[in-house]
Image (cartoon, rainbow, N blue to C red; front, side, top):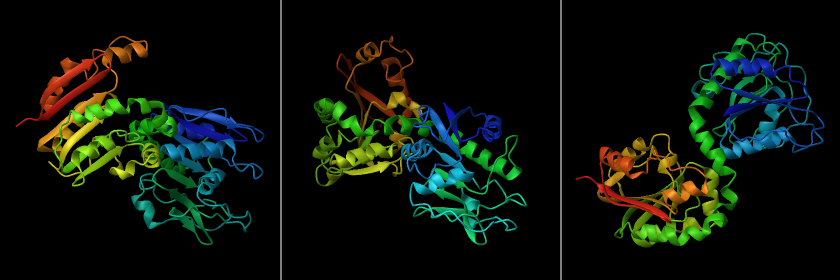
Length: 392
């Protein structure tokens, strides 16, 4: 895992940026793009963040660096676009303004009130004295938040969505960045580190979301059979955690009936968008959220269905405790995978993992410690299934 640093035309600025990242404990992977490059020599595989220095040639609307920005924003990879690179970020939601304008020399760059609560800018403090503002018009995307401004040129720094930052007035030099720029980079590095776990998940599944349903449609009958083992009565809330494209939602809806509610939760927005395209909104609600921090009240859920999720979480025990928090006293948890342990290990050419949290010797005690009673455990050749209920 690394932060990808993209530099167009010259690599002079990259070492100074990489030095700040290294001081925060992050590895940098630098990519130098020539003006005539036909495609980017790197992608976002394994990327925790993206920093872009420089901008596209006007004759090439979808330049390699802009393509990387677009991919990062779609996958939830944090983006920091500096100097001319900030125009790339703005162009993803609005056309660029025409170059021009007078010099911004002598004008003071100031933070806006929104910078005080921004996760990257909150600790940066005021801009360095004498900082030269960018003096070209720039049209920002709808909903963008301006973080730094100056008289006549208001778009000096801005945030797009929850994961893209553009800083037009910051021009790192070949040997160092000024104190304010270093603090901004430090704030971005801290955010990248804090989001790394979620970033990796979203980046992995975003690329696969478009064809996920078609690749695994043959597993739908197995999902339906697994949901039937929950034996839910009509009414109440049923959760599909790590829902992907929502293959379990129709079966959950059939169990809870019109008086019940199905809530499908996934960390990757692209998966939820794919679920919507496949008509799953007709069976319930789709929500982008962390399954270990559910936005639900205690004891509010009748059923929790989770397929292929628990053994991929960094802290499975914390997840089991959170799911126990939201389950009603008469609720049920069903963990499922359409392949058994031995089948999955053989398919991936590796031995069985004794540390797998779904292994019988680990899952039973973990469920008990989290407040569950395991009443069914099946590790069959062609499926895995564990059913648990709250301990009274």
